[in-house]
Amino acid sequence: MGNPTLLLLDEPSEGLAPRLVETMGEAILRLKQSGLSILLSEQNIHFADRITDRVYVIEKGSVAYDGSIVAFRESRDVHEKYLAV
Image 1 (cartoon, helix red, strand yellow):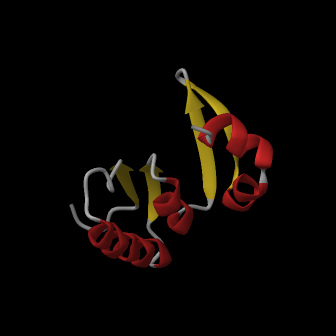
Image 2: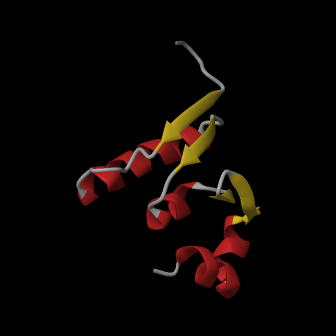
Image 3: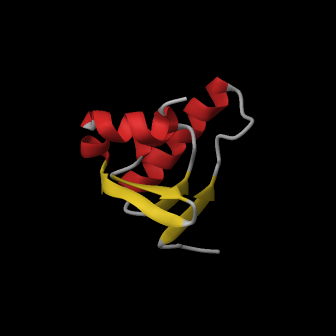
């Protein structure tokens, strides 16, 4: 497909070595900087944090949280509710 306007990625870091995840993240960032829109479904929050502008947390099939990546990073309540193990 030539010149797409949207890239959909479903768990692209799953099962990859950390170095490959880093390299892939850099490539995705270059695509984003070129103006390509990216929809990323990802459980690796450290990987997603480098790429995303907005966060949507899905719980039981519904959006349980949405906000900017900055607000997500700074929200202790969100971290305790959705990221605590």
